[in-house]
Image (cartoon, rainbow, N blue to C red):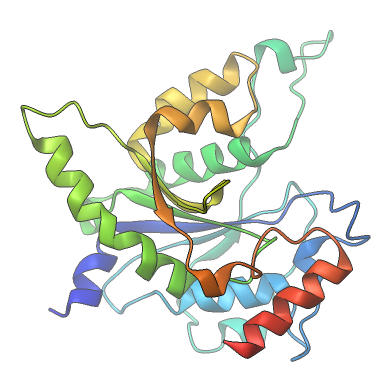
Amino acid sequence: MTDTVKHLRNLAGVVILAGGASRRMGTPKARLMLPSGESLLDYHVRHALSLSADHVSMPVMIADNGRGFTVDPNTRANHPQASVHHIADYVAYGRDRQDDGQQTETGGALVAILSALQTLNLCKSKANATASWLLVISCDSLIPATDLWQKLQSSITELSQRQSSKSSSFDKKVICLADEQHLYPLLGLYQISIEPDLKAYIDSGERRVMPFITPIVQPISLIKNWQYLTNFNTPEEFKRAYTALTDL
C-alpha cells in the first residue's frame, strides 16, 4: 500500500462551500470562470475527485445553500462511479424557528459543514471505518483539493498520537491553514467526531466560526506561494488569484 493510499483512508469526504452571496464579487464565486473556460465549482470538484482511489469510498459534497449550481458532466468523465451530490444546509430549531413553528434556513459556513459531517456519519460503514476527517474547501480559493490535502494530512498522525496519549490533554479536532495574521478555517480538515458539539453550538443560535474552532484548531502555515490564491472577494482579487495560480 502506498503512503498516498494509506493516508487517503483517513479522508471520509470533501465538502465544497459554494453558497456565499458574493456581493462584492458581483456574481456567485462558484460560477466564476477561469481563463481555461472551467467554472470555479468544476475546478474544485475535479480536484476533489482526483483524491479518490479505487478502494476508497469518498463522497464529494456541494453545499450551495440551495442555489442549484450544476457540475459539468465532463468534470466527472474520468470518475463515473464517484459520488458527487448537493447537500442542504443544516436547519436549526430554537432561535431559528419562525412563529408558525416552521424551520428557517440561515446559511453560513458552519451549518454547511455540520450538514456534511452528518451526511458522513450516516453513510459511515465498515468499508471506511478508519476515515475520520472531512476536507473543507471554500469557493474563495484556488488551492486545489489535492494540494490542500497533501499539506494538511501530515498533521493527522501527529494529532492522533497526542490524542491517544494518556498523559496528554491535547485535543485538536480541526486542522486549517494559517498565516501570521489569520486562520483560514474554510480551508481545513474537520474531525467527524465534532458533529454533536457543532450541532449544540448551532442549535444555541451561534453561527460564528472562530469562537467554535479556536479552542480545538491546529494551525498549519500557509505556503508562501498560496498567499494570493485565497480569500478573494472582488473581480480584481480573483484576477490576481488566477494569475498567481498560472505563475506557480
